Image (tube, rainbow, N blue to C red; front, side, top):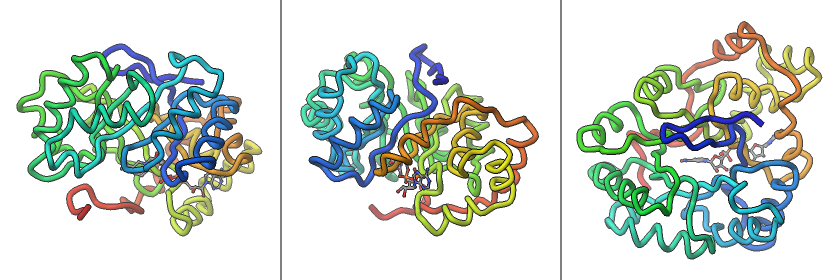
Length: 276
Ligand code: NAD
């Protein structure tokens, strides 16, 4: 495993496991336990994924000690808008059955609310119940807005990022501000976009050269860039495949060839124009 050192000194695995879409209950519990067995030590959930209870159960039943797992959850947009941030956080802890999380982040920048939400996350951080706090789906202007009143710099910014949306200017801005970059939908998220990414010549060529799958090439590219990545799969073979990326390296030129696939194409919502 390789690690990122966040701006408050805590370490976070560069490769984690996303659980969006895993159904609360047997599917989520068994899948997360399988991922932990396969070697993942970082899990990314959200109150909005409706599976926090199962994620917490899987962690407790995994046989791996709590302090070896890096657990992220997110503040839902409804709770951000209502201002009930502290209560939402406590409710997440209660569903997870944990007394702290490693990282708590705002899910989306809700216009008119995210500045206040950030100050509430700072309080949660100061209470010691989140080892780090951060944001998600922030554009530079959202960061500039919270910068006016922040006393704590977000540890990371989790945004959509894959070979067709490389986020170079945003990630450069984040790094200048000491905010770690993190990728969601690193494999493109939805099937049609993923198929086009995986069929790109820059990727198929490397897959052949290294005897790896297109998914492994893309995830390794994330690691080479120092971008924290959280691929999701419910399929045991793919969960293992996505973890098996630490026995080869791309050259800087090969990584640059993947960078060059960028076309600023989103598969998910636009952070400046979403309606949920
Ligand atoms: P992803 O890019 O991880 O792709 C997931 C899909 O790719 C899976 O459904 C699976 O069908 C397929 N897949 C996985 N491994 C594969 C492999 N080796 N070969 C072929 N296909 C494979 O997309 P995602 O789930 O959207 O994103 C990952 C995680 O990011 C989520 O689970 C969630 O934790 C997080 N996320 C966060 C936000 C946010 O707003 N902060 C939004 C979306 C997702």
